[in-house]
Amino acid sequence: MSIDSDTRPASFWFYTGMKGITSLPALILMTSFVGFSAFALEAGISRGEAMFMTFGIWALPAQMILVGMMTTGAPLAACFLAVTLSSIRMMPMVASIVPEMRTRLTPTWLLLFASHFIAITAWVFALRTLRDVPREHRAVYFLGFGLTLTTINTGIVAICYGLVSQFPPLVAGTLFMLTPVYFVASIWATAHHSVVRLAFMVGIVGGPFMALVAPEFDVLYAGIGGGTAAYLIDRFYIRRRRRTGSAR
Image (cartoon, rainbow, N blue to C red):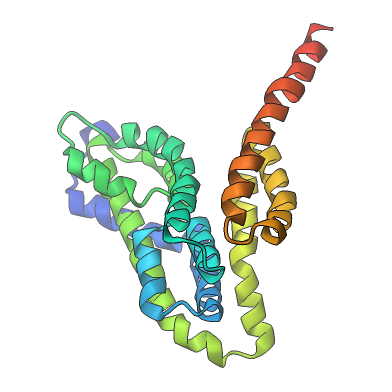
């Protein structure tokens, strides 16, 4: 049966999207949220706050940034700006996926609601699977995956928040490290342009330095400064060398 003439109900495609929770990227993300539970507990963030961050922000790097800035006593405005700047990177993902889900009859509110669940894991999942779903059911299919993934991870945070304190120090430390490892691996794996990888490396080096110089604004300064420096280096050095090399 052609996917353009599929007659199966929307509920079928919602359930099909839900089954994506068993995919490897989803399982890795769920494990990483166990690590986030340990991170939140060690940082003194309450269970309710950690759950709200998970469902409300739904971006593990942004959640780590927020927790890190809260522990350093950063002002609320700085926390808001840092999380906002971190989440701007999701805009290209939304711009590339939403048109694939939109039809002439798709309600705008449904697309706006679905866009909340677009993060690295859901974006990769959608890129691989949306083409096999009838266009008129793609938004529902994606919601089945995104809503399920977000809800389950919120539940994982709620359950594991109290359990991680009972783990042996080695296990707790390992789980704690899962979050930054996932963060680093995900950003590097999805960086398809040299400027992104360059900005990442500048941030890795500049982040600890700014933490010593300006601990209340380290993430903000390292992000804006490192990103700007990476853009200038890529634009005026790396690209120029490429053009010179191709002209020879």
